[in-house]
Each structure stands twice: as C-alpha cells, then as structure tokens.
Length: 187
Ligand SMILES: CC(C)(COP(=O)(O)OP(=O)(O)OC[C@H]1O[C@@H](n2cnc3c(N)ncnc32)[C@H](O)[C@@H]1OP(=O)(O)O)[C@@H](O)C(=O)NCCC(=O)NCCS
Image 1 (cartoon, rainbow, N blue to C red):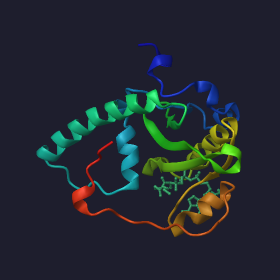
Image 2 (cartoon, rainbow, N blue to C red):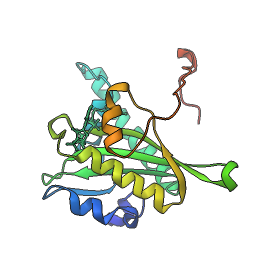
Image 3 (cartoon, rainbow, N blue to C red):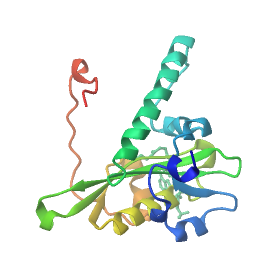
Image 4 (cartoon, rainbow, N blue to C red):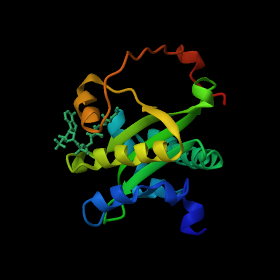
C-alpha cells in the first residue's frame, strides 16, 4: 500500500504555512492506517484516564486496535466529511492529533459547518505550539472545504488556549448522556 493510499484524506488539504511553522523535524499530515504503531492512541489518552492496564484489559486494547483500523477505513470511505490529522516527530512518533468533521446543513443556503473534536498533544510535547498548529491546520481544512463557520466545545480551562487560536466564546454547550445500557454503538 503506498503512503497515499494509506492516508485518511488528501494531503493537499494540509496547510503548507502550518507545515513550515512546525519545529524542525516535525511533520503534519493526514492520519495513516498504521499510525496506531506510532502511538496515536497514546496521544489520545491525554483526553481521558486509562489507569493501570491489566493483561485482560490489554487484550481489550488489542481489540481496540482492530476497532481503530475498522474505524480508520470507515472514516476513509467518508473522507469528504472526516478529517483527522496528526503531527509526527522526528522519531516517527505521533505527538499531536485533531479532527474536524463537516456537517451539511439545510440552513444558510445548504451551508457547511466544521466541528473540531479530540484535540490532543502528548504531555511531553505540550507548550511547543503544536496544539496551535493543529487548530490552524483544522481551520484551513474548514476554510478550504467551504465551511461558513468552525465550532468546538471545550473545558473552561482551555478557553484561553482556543482564544489564542482565534476562537471566541459563543453561547452555551448542553449535553445529555444516554443511559449505560444504550451506550453500545449501533451504527
Ligand atoms: C490544550 C492543548 C491541546 C494545548 O496544546 P499545546 O501544544 O500545549 O499548546 P500550545 O503550545 O499550542 O499553546 C498555544 C498558546 O496557548 C497557550 N495555552 C495553551 N494551553 C493553555 C491553557 N490551558 N490555558 C492558557 N493558555 C494556554 C500557550 O501558552 C500558548 O500561548 P502563547 O502563544 O502566548 O505562547 C494541550 O495542552 C492538550 O493536549 N491538553 C490535554 C487535552 C485537552 O485538554 N485537549 C483539548 C480538548 S477540548
């Protein structure tokens, strides 16, 4: 499989300005199908607690591997809507990741809205402007695909970070969590 086939979406949607602004040796590119080997899931773990992993849990993690692959190819089949990009270090490890998915509206003349999700930078790599570069790259995808706005939800403590990325506080996030019995994905 060539690197191009391996990628989630076309690299032409990766901002050249963002690539040029990265620290030396770092690359920004679409997610690749073998990125779990480069620590993609480890990077995402900054978003949620994993805790001590037993062998049984580790096997579940292996299963999660295949889930990730399955998810990757689903996303690739929908790569006009899902754009997950990663920053790779000179050691060929994933050090940052983020996603924008594009929603098709009826309103605003059948307009498009970009939703930014799952922004994560490896703990040891935070503070190097990698988070800022990921957001700039996702905004570029939003602008290139013709979104009229790009929005996201975040915790109060991350508001200053997103303000530095050019976002402004707007309205309120509301959430409803389904009961535990109904959390198994059925799609
Ligand atoms: C939030 C996160 C993505 C920021 O990434 P990062 O690479 O560490 O941040 P950057 O170096 O790009 O920061 C860019 C600017 O925002 C500032 N900033 C970053 N996080 C901040 C915070 N929590 N509060 C205030 N300012 C912050 C930086 O100081 C920097 O400011 P400067 O340009 O004046 O120097 C990263 O810390 C992370 O992955 N956190 C854990 C997961 C998470 O919370 N994800 C967001 C889910 S909504």
